[in-house]
Amino acid sequence: MPFNLMEIRTRTVSANDYINNLEEPFKEKFLTRKQTYQLNRETISQLRAFAGKYVIIAFSSGWCKDCAVNIPVLALINETAGLEVRVFGGLKRDPLNQVHKWRIPPSPQEVETLNVENIPLIIIADIEGREIGRIVEKPSRQPTLEQEISEIIKSKQ
Image 1 (cartoon, rainbow, N blue to C red):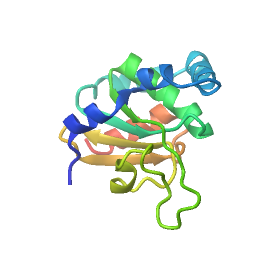
Image 2: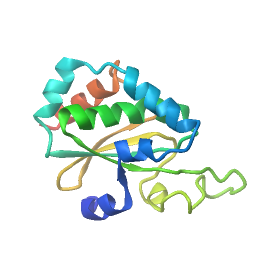
Image 3: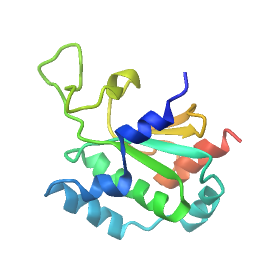
């Protein structure tokens, strides 16, 4: 069943807004990664062709080390390639609950409906809201996040 992208847009923030609204010391880690990461220029050039056709939906939390590595890269992808990136932030584990991994709230209800096990969860959807791929924690098939996103999109062309 496709995502309701209009609803997701109202319940999320852009990657840059997410980073800028983090509390310290998390904000500094995310910003440092964003300022020092060098995108693969060839891949960004390829991703520009898909702007407006795909949306990236990510789940994150400030305490998550893999989030601090990958969410800033998503912000850069948004800025340089124009791909829309929306972030559900503030996820919090519920260690005492045997049934549910995430405490809702502050975690959004989507952690259950979209089967979020580990974060960051990065979902790539087409503009109709159909999921075409997901990346859990970090790229697994390509050396960089932007290359893996590009490969996922190109595999659906």
